[in-house]
Length: 151
Image 1: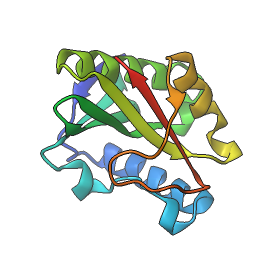
Image 2: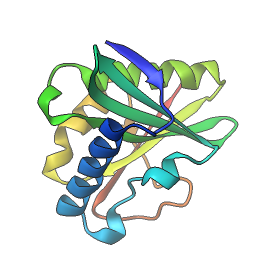
Image 3: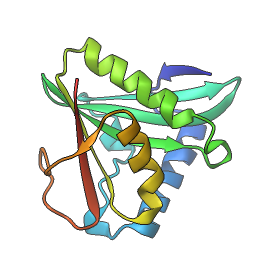
C-alpha cells in the first residue's frame, strides 16, 4: 500500500467521493452532513490523500487546517471492497504524522452519531480520540459526534 497527495483529478477518486457523499446523504439528514465535495476538498487549507495498492484505490482522507495549531480530519473513506483490511488505520496514521510534522497540538473530527458510524468511533478511540464539544463552526447536533486528540 502506498499513499499519495492527490490532486482529485482521477475518475477513481471521483467515484469514491461520490459514494461517500451518497452514503452520508442516505444515513444523515442534510443539515447534519458535513462531508466536503470536490470543491471543498480543493481549498488551499485542505490536503487530500489517496491510498493505493498497485493501481487500485483503497481509500482516502484529508486534513484541514483550522488554525496553525489545530487540524481537522475530513473525508475518511474506505472503498467498499476493502473494508476491514486496515485501510482507514493506514490513512489515519498518515494524517496523524503530518499533523505532528506541521506542529499542530490538536486534531479534531466530526462524524455521525448513528450506529452506522460505530466502526469509525472505535477506530478513533483506539488512536486516543475522545469526545468533545463542537469546534470551529460546528454546532451541537444530535446526529454528530465530535472528537479530539491532543498531539
